[in-house]
Structure formats: structure tokens, C-alpha cells
Length: 330
Image (cartoon, helix red, strand yellow):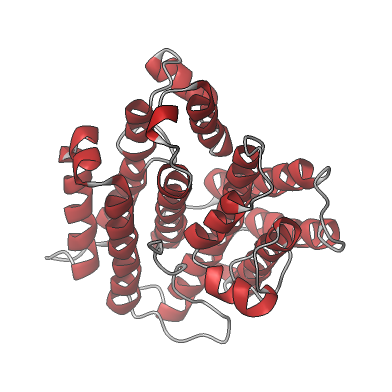
């Protein structure tokens, strides 16, 4: 590799944490929208968000019983949570500083400005009224970084390591958002197909900015199989599992174009891509959606570990940890 492992590591994790910040905002948005349908005083929706984000244990160690306000703060502001929005933006900026000479001035300024803006916006606890604006701010700032990246970076191996981090994280988080609805919040059989069930599915689409594009693709026919197909297998949907692995395969092919044989991480990406391409929604539902998502997240984490090994990512002073722990079974 012409690119030093330390630099590749910094690029990979900078974009992984940028994507994680945005996707945590989307996960909280999904919980907030679905909680509006809860007519009881229970906090099941928010507890399910903790489980799907892989941080239930660390939350309970600090706060104990689930509480909506504490959960929101833990996921957005708490720097004791390495996957919170604030922590993710902080870590992305630290990695950006480390690889500053490998990225364009526009990308660095977008990352640094985002850090300053988010730090200021999250200086105080977030109330329910301001939550939507905060989540929109995070999504907008991450989109600005992405725009600077795609608009100014040379299409070299630097570009491809950034894409590997971003799309691995995006695939992980799309799986988690899907699992929030289908497993933790699965309605009683009598509610399946009801107005409440359809509203919750529509809320999932809105949380990933896919409500209108779904309507274009499926004529606004809100059914669980169609939505699962859209978010998992439809390669034209930019946050779907299929699209993420299409982009991962493309990035890997560029990185390996000067080698005689594909490395183990590239081989694993191709295997997952081929499996997703051949899969049908009926097969997923027959085998169990939660079980499929749980296995997918484990496989996705294994790809990240193989990339670190194959491209010689060296240990760094910054907290570049693996993706959140796998979805837990209740």
C-alpha cells in the first residue's frame, strides 16, 4: 500500500464517525417519531433504541432505569458514551486533524465547522421541543461534509478508505433502524397492517429521509415487505444494505486493482454483496428478520476487522473502536 496504515486508519475512522453521528440522529429520530404512537407511560420505544444502538449496558450502568430525557441526552450529548453524537463528532475531528494533509482544505473546514457548531448546539441539555431542530442540524452538517468530500477529493485510495468507513457504518445503522421497528416494537398480530402499524413504518422511512423516494418506487403502498425490500435490498436506495455493499465492493475493487489477488476483506465484501443480491424479502421473513439483521451486523463488523488487518491499520491514540455491539436479543 502506498498509503500509510496510520493515515488509512484515520481516514477510515473519520468518515465512520461522521456517518455514526448522522445515523445516531436518525436512530433517535426514529424513536421520537414512534414514541408519539405510544399511549401509555412506558418507555419501551426508547429502551429499544438503546438496545439497537448497542449501548443499553453502558446506559444502565450510568443511569439505571430507562428514562426518556436521560436516554436522549445519553445518545446525543453524553461524552461518556463513545457513540453519542457529540462524542462521534469529536472523534471524527481528532482523526481529521491527524490526516489533515491527506484531505482537501474544504473537507477539513467542513469537519471543523461542524465540530464547533455541534459543540455549541449541544452545550445545554436538549428539551423535547428543540429535539427535531437539533437532529436536523446534525444531519445537515454531516451532509455538508459529504458534499465537500465528493466535490473536492481526488478519486485515489484516500477517497476509497473514506468510503469504506462511511458505507460500513451506514449499513450497520440501517440494519439497526430497521430492527427498532420490526423486533422491539413489533405490534400485536391484530395491529399488523393497521393505521398504527403503517404510521410506524412511515416513521422509519422518514427517519432515513426515504419517505418520498419510497413513494416513487412503490406507489406509496406502505407494506412491511415493500419497506424491508427498499431498506435492505434495493440498490437504488442510498441507505439500503444492498447499495452500501455495492459501494463497498466498488471501493475495494479500486484499492485492489494493482494486486494479483483479492485480499480477505475484499473477498468477504463480495460474498455479502452476492448474498444480498440473490436474497428475496420472503426468504428474509421466513428465516426471521431480527435474526437476519443480527447476523448481518456481525458479518459487517467482521469486514471492518479484516480491513484493519489487511491494510495494516496501526493502533492510534484516538478512540477508534469497533462498531457498536451487535443487536441484543430480548
